[in-house]
Image 1 (cartoon, rainbow, N blue to C red):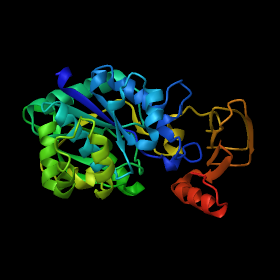
Image 2 (cartoon, helix red, strand yellow; image 1 turned 30 degrees about the vertical axis):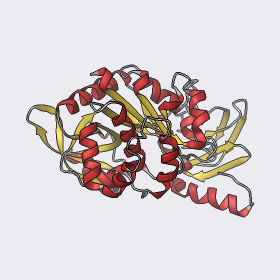
Image 3 (cartoon, rainbow, N blue to C red; image 1 turned 180 degrees about the vertical axis):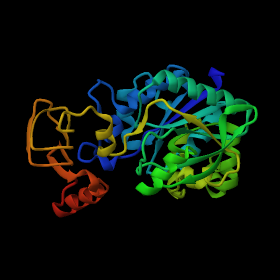
Image 4 (spheres, rainbow, N blue to C red; image 1 turned 45 degrees about the vertical axis):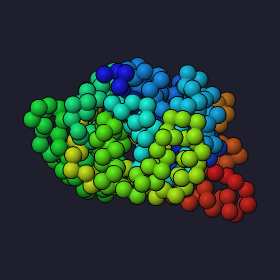
Amino acid sequence: MFENSYCIIMGGGIGSRFWPSSRENRPKQFLDIFGTGRSLLQMTFYRFATFIPTKNILVVTNEIYRDQVLEQLPSLSPNQILLEPLRRNTAPCIAYACYHIQALNPQANIVVSPSDHLILNEMEFSKDVQSALSYVERHSELVTLGVRPSRPETGYGYIQMGKQKADNEAFHNVKTFTEKPNLEMAQIFLDSGEFLWNSGMFIWNIQTITSALRQHLPELCSLLDEGAGLYATEGEHDFIKEAFPRSQSISIDFGVMEKADNVTVLPVDFGWADLGTWGSLYELKDKDEQRNVILHANSAFYEAHGNIVSMEDPDSLVVVQGIDDCIIAHSNKVLLICKKDQEQRIKEFMGNASSTYNKKYD
């Protein structure tokens, strides 16, 4: 199975909700968020490299990040980095990578993963993904990993489980996909026991996903078909550079997963978190007696509760008094102080700062 196992790591986002630490020229997947000596991208790569051959791991990223990927993952060859000339959401990204893999191995079984997720129990993760890869080798189904929820989270999408599969009770049919709910609905989801967090990780064999893409996104496939014979050759990059801007911008969830009738979910519990926001990072980190979190700096808090502080200089001393439930982050000449419950506005703040001062702060 292992020689037919491939991994697609999606690493082209700019992580705007982690501004100012995450910038367009060095987004969050390249940052050592936890101070472990490894970036999120490196953590993702080495997690999969324990059971998937290194030569079968691909990173799809924006062409401006090519050198950063090579610097952080020196065991990859340049042809394992698939370059997008611009961002077109996850469906074109995944479809392009699948066309590339099909040219290499028409028997491939593929796991798709974002580059910025945290997995606490990597042994359990490895077991679950390998189980899913084995499953799709024998079943023409689109498998997604659904995380068992631990709280009524409003920042994640949800998957409603259906009946267990007759030949493998670990897997379930999918009833519905639901976008991020309000708190009341999230509590109902949690109490029902039928709903899982949508992890954004997928497993399928190459024949099943290409068939689904042709059925549900025929225009995208027609575009990529123009490059027949060029994938996994020296002509691939030039073709993608010309063709990719003509593709629609659409997510794989909306474009395929929510429409297909052969979608299956594997419920998992391996300590997962989508590090999409400062708030998600705050929830994960250890807190002091006043519920404050400090990253990469020294701190002193006085009558201050529920804050997360991140400084560019680890020798910084941050003194906070009388401020509650805020994000306080400094990076590359930008200091952000923002209420945690207003962090959805960070992208707005970033754009306004750049336009107000006629200087690129993203």
